[in-house]
Length: 151
Image 1 (cartoon, rainbow, N blue to C red):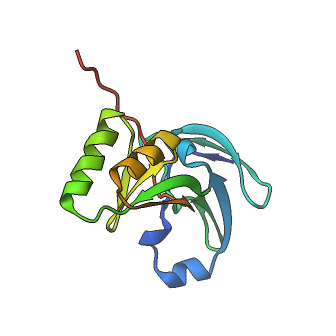
Image 2: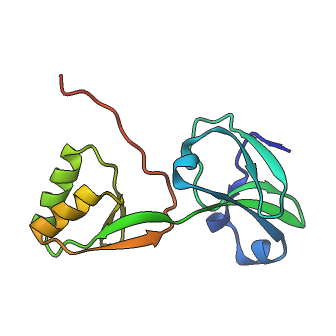
C-alpha cells in the first residue's frame, strides 16, 4: 500500500466515526514525523510506503488510510524529554534565551516548555534553579531545528 496524502486527523473526527472502525497504528519516533518518504509497518505487520505529495510533516493522529471498516493512524513513541515549568515570566525568558542560544527546538503545552533530553540543559536548569522534570512523553509534532546563520 502506498500513501500519498493524509485523509484527516483523528482529532477532527466524530467519536462515532472512530469507534465503528478497526484501528491499526503506525508507531514512529518523533524525528520520523518530518520524513515525507518512508517505509513503515503497522502494529498488525502490514508494510506501508509513505510518499506524501504535500510538503507537510506528519502529526500524531494523522489518518493514513480509511475505509468504512478500517483505518491506519500515526502514533508517536514517547521521547526522553525535559519538561520545564518556569514559575515566572522572568524564568521563562531566561531559559528560552539560553536554549535559543543553543539552537535547541522546544515545544509548548499548557504552561510547560519541553525539550529533548540533554544533560547540559539539565545542568543549566539546576544551576538556574528553574523547576523541571525528566519524563518520557509523547509529542504530537517533531522537534524541528530551524537553520540560520550569525553572519
